[in-house]
Image (cartoon, rainbow, N blue to C red; front, side, top):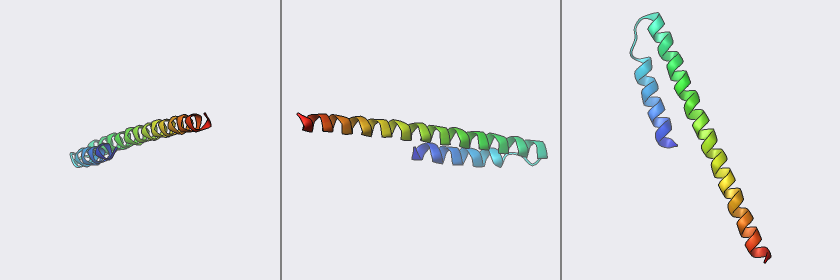
Length: 67
């Protein structure tokens, strides 16, 4: 996840720094925002998967201790 955040920051900085025309700058800002949104979505999905895995592990431990 940290690699994705760093990659997004680097790509966003590169995209944002490419243009000096207004339309290019706006396009770069949009792309950087979209990249940030994708990173945020990926982080949310990873958090959900981690939460599910922890819950399943807890259930297995609970089942094992009940026996």
